Image (cartoon, rainbow, N blue to C red; front, side):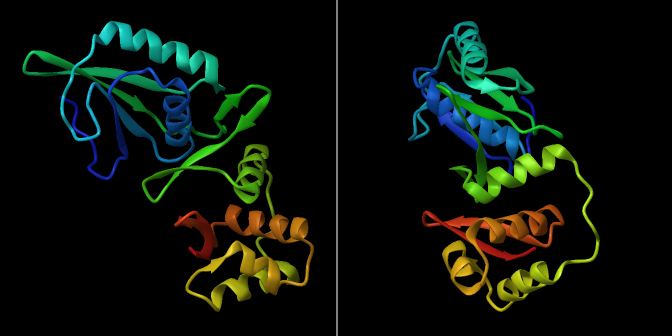
Length: 200
């Protein structure tokens, strides 16, 4: 058995019959710190087993149909009694954003606080900005300092509150938030269906 960091996110699935959920989960792993899908286990941790080769083929088809660009992953099988369980280890993507292909839409999913989250506007802009690999000045602009000061006054502040407190348009505020994220001065959390910002 391959040893994994106990903090590595893991999600169990009975089988690969829900390709959309599986694809979103793999995209979230690739865009975050990686993770593992375990196929052949119920939510209550009861092992039901699978046919590994069949599930491997289905996983490859899901990646081909719903994920772009392709992700790095590998399989390993574990025998539990007379039953087989398949682990799908998804590796963190380096220097490229991975998208879930939803018809004509390209969506970004992430793992935040051990949950799979669809990226909001700021996170989408951040990933696109990061892909450009642009250099930005070390010295913060006046507007960036204003945004940072508002965030620093709270332990964490919701995005809605940030928009209300800053006398800038929503797009402009998001532009500066993306730059602060890029510098790793702030971070975004997701708690009870709300996005919050705090200092890194």
